Each structure stands twice: as C-alpha cells, then as structure tokens.
Length: 197
Image (cartoon, rainbow, N blue to C red; front, side, top):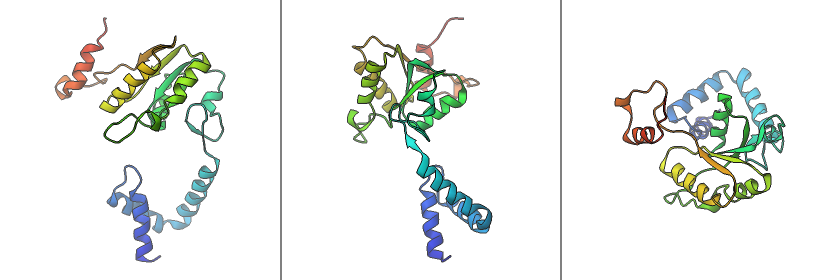
C-alpha cells in the first residue's frame, strides 16, 4: 500500500461522524495491521448491507424489507405515529423499549439558515399518511433545538385541521441533573412542563 493510498483511506474514514483525522488514522492503522482478520469481513459486510437495506416507503426507516419490520408488525399500535427528525432518533426510542406505535422519519428539520423548507423534508407524506391511516395521535419528537421547535410548530399547523391528537415529548431537567448546571432554556422548559405530585 502506498502512502498516498493510505492517506486516501484516512480521508474517507475522517468523513464519518465522530471520527476526525486522528481517530481515522488510528482506525486505518488498526485495519492495516489486522487486514487478514478485519478488512475482508468488513468489506463483505459493507457490501451485503449496501445491497440489502432499503428505505421504508411508509415511515422512512432503514430495513432489509419494505415496509420495514416496525410498520409490518401487527402487535404495534398503528393508531399512534411518532414523528422523529432522523433514523438515529427512531433507533434511540426503540432502544428504550417505551414506545410501541409507528414512526415517521422527517429526514431533517426546517432550517432557514440551511435553506431547508417543507419540500426538502418528509412533511407532505406525513399529512397524507395521517389522513389515510386514521391515526388517532401524532407524537412530535423533534429535538429541543431552534430548528426542531420550528419544525414541531410547522407540523402542528399542518395537522391542525385533522381530528388527530397532537402531543410533544416532555422537556426539561434530565434525570440526575443538577439545577446549577442547566442552561436557561432547559430550566424554562422544565418550569413550563412541571407536573403535580
């Protein structure tokens, strides 16, 4: 392997989220040192996943089947749809084992700064899906960021004429959080979302 090809490999790994130049160098060095055990299985797995994974036509999740295993599961509550920004958010909720309804992946948020309007994310299909499916509740689970809040307000307006109940995930103080370490926005949200004992 030439130094140039190693540098190209490092540059490719550095494009991955969570990996900078240093981490990418360590990964590449580890792969090269253990190429017999690691590289061939990694390439085969990447190729297999690339060939077999599809985007779900109903919710936008990634799966080896279409519709995905979540949308196809008859044991799930098909009357509740949880709207998330990204597939990673869907996976995080699934790991918690707290939600047994369906999902709708937006593929991003509305962002004036980034030039993302309603047509650039998966909003039109949400309105159509809610109307056609007879969903009773839509849970808006966008992130507590400016773009996430903007998107949540847009969804609220978009679905305001339907008979569906709209709800939002609670926001505020995380479990184990200390007040003096929280930012003003988190404290403000916690006071607004306070509940009785």
